[in-house]
Image 1 (cartoon, rainbow, N blue to C red):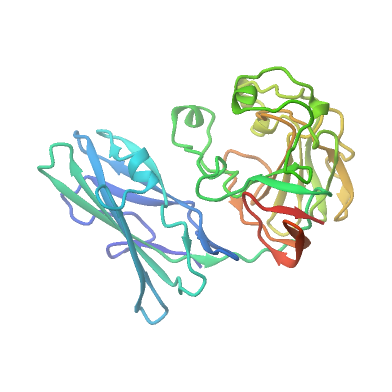
Image 2: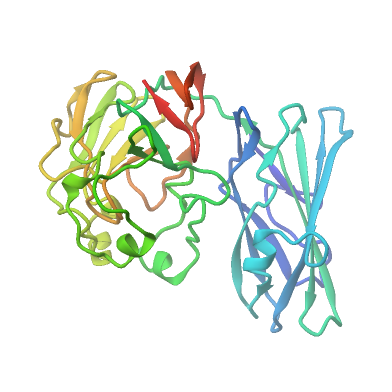
Length: 366
């Protein structure tokens, strides 16, 4: 059971002192520990609230980690002077009567550190530095136990274009912004999402002329068939029941207004499979007209369900994959994912993985 604390109050948020205008909450409510070769990963956010009439600067955040005997096992900090983190640089202040989402900067810890209790201490000051405040919150994370056996949903040489590391755009969804609040978004459904891209031996995912970011972000015309991922089969990563399908959207066509009628419209086209154990997998940006399943169908692991496209909010053809705790989007949270029986391509050699997590930059194959 997950519980978090501030001060002496269990399961709620409170201030260090009655006079402090700052409170801190943890989002989502349950914090998971996901593991990989590089360590233990903590993918969650802090929601900071400033109830004062003054702008407040975030000066420092410090983490203390305790083991089951409540002994200190690790301590680290970021501050505005000697150890600035991306978060302190990006969003160092809280507006008067404002809120801000502060992504946990202590995202990866060594494998051998016991993560029984995490104590986060925040320091703040007014802009004129005449007043200082502090807030403390404690987290008891739990190791994620995946109920579904998953295999890679694509065959061939697959690059993880964007996973769920600290810098990933999947990780950095500020659902407190006005746009998300207007559509009723309350969570980060793609917190642990993975973008899969088919590549050649040189790592290129397209044919023909060299592309730059301006080509994709400024929508310079190109042909979908020039991309190695376009039209390749998408396979069910795990067995289950299909609960949602859409495949009538065009490539690279995304209208935010569509979210009013379809909360999954970010993906354009998609298939969602309920694994009947509290876990769902979503396959996004599939090719128009390519769905081979319908809602209500039961599917086995490894059967083809669609083909890769670029529908919805997509720069180019790729498969957007999520393991999540629901079918929709507005109140759904992402879950870590572990895949079975795949190989990591390490230059001229490969490494077989019986079960493991994958993330940005890895090249894998079934």
